[in-house]
Picture 1 (cartoon, rainbow, N blue to C red):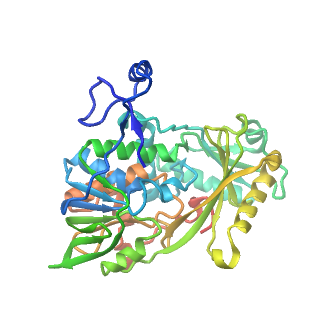
Picture 2: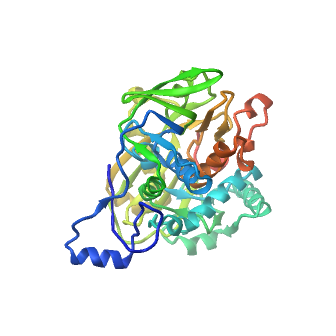
Picture 3: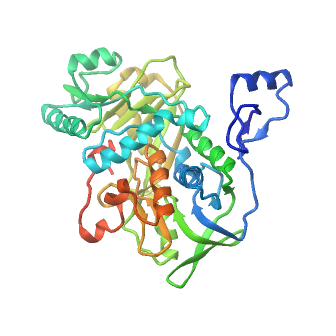
Length: 429
């Protein structure tokens, strides 16, 4: 997949042209002819300093930060399909840092801060909209738990605001406060919001390519070649590609590919479904989550109502099919906002999430000398893209684990120091 960019005389890194009003005007005068691809489609070379498997958000962000922050440009990102065709293009685009434990809060807050300036930093409109993330409480017990969650956020230096029932009525007039489990309050992180998921992926791809990274699509990795205590190459459908170090950023395929390198991961892969309705005029200007009614909902920049729910761990598609989960998600949103029941569903999709036993990511160095991991993101992979790429790039460049990644190292499963963030995932795993 290629995206075109517009030529410009502004000063940007070599190979990356600016998207600007002036360049758009100039191309309009030329009939919009002569647009160039935003990134190359190179043939893979036989050897790279760093080989990243997976051209989703995490793989591309890691490559970009390796090149831009650490001067490591001899990097290949290998993708079996098309760029951003996996979970990066199959999510609900929420960006937030409302996590409970200090380790998670620090990491996701770093990611949210990067999101806040990412459009300017990469000269690409990622459509970041800090519209807030509202978590609902459907009883006094849940309200007390959410109060504890919000207080923990405050202690971690992250914005949170407790809301009463009438506050929520004023904030979201279309919400049915007297639903099957009446809403008694909640809390909101106002800096949270949404970004366009495709735009985030394309922005990192364009910037990484401009920095000299080779993004190789239609290049499926089938296994690794090892020797002298580490990995030496990857086998692909386009030949064997050598490397000094390797990183796996392949949600849904982490366990299978790691096994070919001799590494066993404590990961379970589950489907997570979502859908969008036909577009309507602006009616919902925040993200709403309900653990009890069991859904989350927002409105996209195009007017579509975006609906998500829990992962589907109990029945495979062969046994149950996708329709029951879609029906359950639709029923939950209709319970919260009855007027949405009149909307038609336009699209439904599923991503495959890698989930660790403690619902926290597994990122950093592994027991194999030159193999690095970015997996176990569960339902939080999209919101973690900027920080995940930034910290993994630092870890690869320095040969030691970044401070923000130490709590999420694979070694925690040996020590037993787990970080159970299942509740902050927003949906059941």
